[in-house]
Image 1 (cartoon, helix red, strand yellow):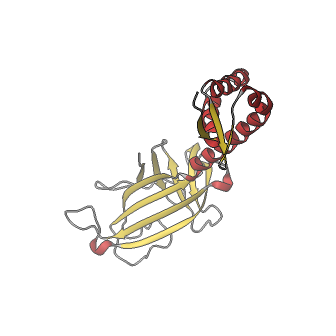
Image 2 (image 1 turned 180 degrees about the horizontal axis):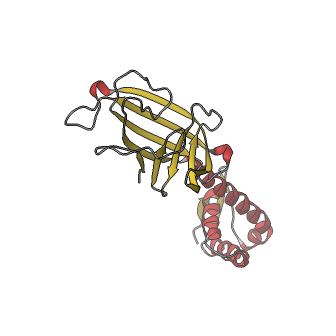
Image 3 (image 1 turned 90 degrees about the horizontal axis):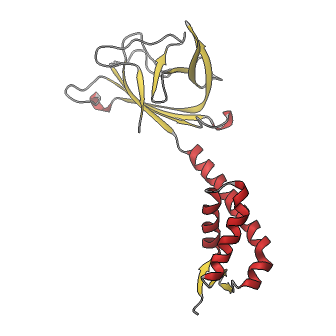
Length: 224
Protein backbone atom coordinates (compact mmCIF):
# COMPACT_ATOMS: atom_id res chain seq x y z
CA UNK A 1 0.00 0.00 0.00
CA UNK A 2 1.35 3.41 -0.96
CA UNK A 3 2.33 5.66 1.92
CA UNK A 4 1.38 9.34 1.67
CA UNK A 5 3.72 11.92 3.23
CA UNK A 6 2.28 15.03 4.90
CA UNK A 7 3.92 17.90 6.77
CA UNK A 8 4.02 17.61 10.56
CA UNK A 9 2.37 21.05 10.77
CA UNK A 10 -0.61 19.76 8.80
CA UNK A 11 -1.01 16.88 11.25
CA UNK A 12 -0.99 19.28 14.17
CA UNK A 13 -3.45 21.62 12.44
CA UNK A 14 -5.88 18.77 11.84
CA UNK A 15 -5.69 17.63 15.44
CA UNK A 16 -5.86 21.16 16.87
CA UNK A 17 -8.97 22.02 14.86
CA UNK A 18 -10.71 18.96 16.21
CA UNK A 19 -9.39 19.89 19.67
CA UNK A 20 -11.26 23.20 19.57
CA UNK A 21 -14.63 21.67 18.75
CA UNK A 22 -14.95 19.02 21.46
CA UNK A 23 -15.40 18.89 25.21
CA UNK A 24 -12.52 18.42 27.61
CA UNK A 25 -13.40 14.85 28.59
CA UNK A 26 -13.47 13.72 24.96
CA UNK A 27 -10.12 15.22 23.95
CA UNK A 28 -8.08 12.13 24.89
CA UNK A 29 -10.34 9.82 22.90
CA UNK A 30 -10.29 12.17 19.93
CA UNK A 31 -6.49 12.31 19.93
CA UNK A 32 -6.32 8.52 19.87
CA UNK A 33 -8.91 8.46 17.08
CA UNK A 34 -6.97 10.92 14.92
CA UNK A 35 -3.69 9.11 15.45
CA UNK A 36 -5.40 5.84 14.57
CA UNK A 37 -6.75 7.51 11.43
CA UNK A 38 -3.21 8.43 10.42
CA UNK A 39 -2.25 4.79 10.86
CA UNK A 40 -5.28 3.59 8.87
CA UNK A 41 -4.53 6.03 6.02
CA UNK A 42 -0.89 4.93 5.96
CA UNK A 43 0.38 8.47 6.43
CA UNK A 44 4.02 9.24 7.11
CA UNK A 45 4.85 12.46 8.98
CA UNK A 46 7.44 14.70 7.35
CA UNK A 47 9.61 16.86 9.64
CA UNK A 48 12.30 19.06 8.07
CA UNK A 49 12.51 16.81 5.04
CA UNK A 50 12.70 13.54 6.98
CA UNK A 51 9.75 11.15 6.80
CA UNK A 52 8.73 9.28 9.95
CA UNK A 53 6.70 6.09 9.39
CA UNK A 54 3.33 6.41 11.10
CA UNK A 55 2.91 2.74 12.00
CA UNK A 56 1.43 1.25 15.14
CA UNK A 57 4.78 1.02 16.95
CA UNK A 58 5.55 4.65 16.13
CA UNK A 59 2.08 5.77 17.30
CA UNK A 60 2.40 4.05 20.68
CA UNK A 61 5.96 5.25 21.25
CA UNK A 62 5.38 8.87 20.19
CA UNK A 63 1.84 9.42 21.49
CA UNK A 64 3.02 11.61 24.39
CA UNK A 65 5.28 13.61 22.09
CA UNK A 66 2.45 14.20 19.64
CA UNK A 67 0.11 15.14 22.48
CA UNK A 68 2.65 17.72 23.73
CA UNK A 69 3.10 19.07 20.20
CA UNK A 70 -0.66 19.43 19.77
CA UNK A 71 -0.91 21.31 23.08
CA UNK A 72 1.88 23.73 22.04
CA UNK A 73 0.33 24.29 18.60
CA UNK A 74 -3.10 24.82 20.15
CA UNK A 75 -1.73 27.34 22.68
CA UNK A 76 0.13 29.32 20.01
CA UNK A 77 -2.93 29.34 17.74
CA UNK A 78 -5.15 30.67 20.54
CA UNK A 79 -2.57 33.32 21.44
CA UNK A 80 -2.29 34.48 17.82
CA UNK A 81 -6.08 34.57 17.46
CA UNK A 82 -6.46 36.71 20.59
CA UNK A 83 -3.68 39.03 19.38
CA UNK A 84 -5.33 39.43 15.97
CA UNK A 85 -8.69 40.22 17.58
CA UNK A 86 -7.08 42.91 19.76
CA UNK A 87 -5.14 44.31 16.78
CA UNK A 88 -8.30 44.95 14.78
CA UNK A 89 -9.70 48.44 15.52
CA UNK A 90 -13.34 49.40 15.83
CA UNK A 91 -13.86 52.32 13.43
CA UNK A 92 -16.34 55.16 13.89
CA UNK A 93 -16.99 57.90 11.33
CA UNK A 94 -19.04 61.07 11.30
CA UNK A 95 -19.64 64.44 9.69
CA UNK A 96 -20.25 67.00 12.44
CA UNK A 97 -20.84 70.76 12.52
CA UNK A 98 -18.20 73.29 13.39
CA UNK A 99 -19.23 76.87 14.16
CA UNK A 100 -17.74 80.04 15.60
CA UNK A 101 -16.87 79.42 19.25
CA UNK A 102 -17.41 75.69 18.87
CA UNK A 103 -14.24 73.72 18.28
CA UNK A 104 -14.91 70.11 19.28
CA UNK A 105 -11.23 69.14 19.10
CA UNK A 106 -8.20 70.65 20.83
CA UNK A 107 -5.63 71.73 18.26
CA UNK A 108 -8.13 73.24 15.85
CA UNK A 109 -7.64 76.83 14.76
CA UNK A 110 -9.92 79.22 16.67
CA UNK A 111 -9.89 81.82 13.90
CA UNK A 112 -10.01 79.76 10.71
CA UNK A 113 -13.28 79.28 8.89
CA UNK A 114 -14.95 76.03 9.86
CA UNK A 115 -18.35 74.66 8.98
CA UNK A 116 -17.87 70.89 8.80
CA UNK A 117 -15.64 68.25 10.40
CA UNK A 118 -15.21 64.76 8.93
CA UNK A 119 -14.13 62.19 11.51
CA UNK A 120 -12.46 58.80 11.39
CA UNK A 121 -11.85 57.35 14.85
CA UNK A 122 -10.09 54.00 15.23
CA UNK A 123 -10.37 52.47 18.70
CA UNK A 124 -8.12 49.58 19.67
CA UNK A 125 -8.51 47.23 22.63
CA UNK A 126 -12.19 47.67 23.43
CA UNK A 127 -12.29 44.07 24.67
CA UNK A 128 -8.81 44.19 26.17
CA UNK A 129 -7.03 45.58 29.20
CA UNK A 130 -6.11 49.23 29.79
CA UNK A 131 -2.60 48.63 28.45
CA UNK A 132 -3.97 47.78 24.99
CA UNK A 133 -6.42 50.68 24.76
CA UNK A 134 -5.14 53.08 22.13
CA UNK A 135 -6.79 55.21 19.45
CA UNK A 136 -6.05 56.93 16.14
CA UNK A 137 -8.12 59.94 15.16
CA UNK A 138 -7.99 61.66 11.76
CA UNK A 139 -10.17 64.66 11.01
CA UNK A 140 -10.55 67.06 8.10
CA UNK A 141 -12.32 70.35 8.75
CA UNK A 142 -13.18 73.53 6.92
CA UNK A 143 -15.96 74.98 4.76
CA UNK A 144 -18.36 72.54 3.14
CA UNK A 145 -18.09 72.32 -0.63
CA UNK A 146 -21.54 73.02 -2.06
CA UNK A 147 -23.23 70.10 -3.80
CA UNK A 148 -20.74 67.56 -2.45
CA UNK A 149 -19.83 65.81 0.78
CA UNK A 150 -16.33 67.22 0.66
CA UNK A 151 -14.55 70.32 1.91
CA UNK A 152 -13.33 73.39 0.04
CA UNK A 153 -9.70 72.79 -1.00
CA UNK A 154 -9.75 69.53 0.96
CA UNK A 155 -9.94 71.34 4.29
CA UNK A 156 -7.35 71.18 7.07
CA UNK A 157 -6.16 67.84 8.39
CA UNK A 158 -5.82 67.07 12.10
CA UNK A 159 -4.24 63.86 13.40
CA UNK A 160 -4.24 62.58 16.96
CA UNK A 161 -3.28 59.31 18.58
CA UNK A 162 -2.77 58.10 22.12
CA UNK A 163 -4.46 56.18 24.89
CA UNK A 164 -8.12 56.07 25.83
CA UNK A 165 -10.01 54.98 28.93
CA UNK A 166 -13.49 53.83 29.78
CA UNK A 167 -15.13 56.13 32.35
CA UNK A 168 -18.52 56.33 33.98
CA UNK A 169 -20.90 59.20 34.65
CA UNK A 170 -22.08 62.50 33.21
CA UNK A 171 -24.46 65.20 34.51
CA UNK A 172 -27.89 63.65 34.94
CA UNK A 173 -26.68 60.12 34.16
CA UNK A 174 -24.25 58.63 36.70
CA UNK A 175 -24.17 55.26 34.90
CA UNK A 176 -23.35 56.63 31.44
CA UNK A 177 -20.39 54.92 29.73
CA UNK A 178 -17.84 57.44 28.44
CA UNK A 179 -14.92 56.90 26.07
CA UNK A 180 -12.23 59.39 27.09
CA UNK A 181 -9.42 60.07 24.61
CA UNK A 182 -6.16 61.06 26.32
CA UNK A 183 -7.38 60.83 29.93
CA UNK A 184 -3.91 61.78 31.17
CA UNK A 185 -4.12 65.17 29.39
CA UNK A 186 -7.20 66.91 30.83
CA UNK A 187 -6.84 70.00 28.61
CA UNK A 188 -6.74 67.83 25.48
CA UNK A 189 -9.20 65.10 26.48
CA UNK A 190 -12.14 64.31 24.21
CA UNK A 191 -15.27 62.68 25.63
CA UNK A 192 -17.67 60.44 23.74
CA UNK A 193 -20.86 59.01 25.19
CA UNK A 194 -21.55 55.39 24.29
CA UNK A 195 -25.14 55.29 23.05
CA UNK A 196 -24.80 51.69 21.82
CA UNK A 197 -22.17 49.39 20.35
CA UNK A 198 -22.72 51.19 17.02
CA UNK A 199 -23.10 54.82 18.13
CA UNK A 200 -20.97 57.35 20.03
CA UNK A 201 -22.00 60.95 20.73
CA UNK A 202 -19.55 63.78 21.28
CA UNK A 203 -19.60 65.58 24.65
CA UNK A 204 -18.20 68.99 25.54
CA UNK A 205 -15.55 69.56 28.23
CA UNK A 206 -18.29 69.55 30.88
CA UNK A 207 -19.55 66.17 29.62
CA UNK A 208 -22.73 67.66 28.25
CA UNK A 209 -24.22 66.46 24.96
CA UNK A 210 -23.18 68.64 22.04
CA UNK A 211 -26.14 69.80 19.94
CA UNK A 212 -25.96 69.44 16.19
CA UNK A 213 -27.67 71.26 13.35
CA UNK A 214 -30.39 70.37 10.86
CA UNK A 215 -27.67 69.10 8.50
CA UNK A 216 -25.19 67.38 10.80
CA UNK A 217 -25.21 65.83 14.26
CA UNK A 218 -22.39 65.02 16.68
CA UNK A 219 -23.02 61.26 16.52
CA UNK A 220 -20.31 58.91 15.28
CA UNK A 221 -21.39 55.71 13.54
CA UNK A 222 -19.55 52.42 13.64
CA UNK A 223 -18.42 51.05 10.29
CA UNK A 224 -19.57 47.46 9.55
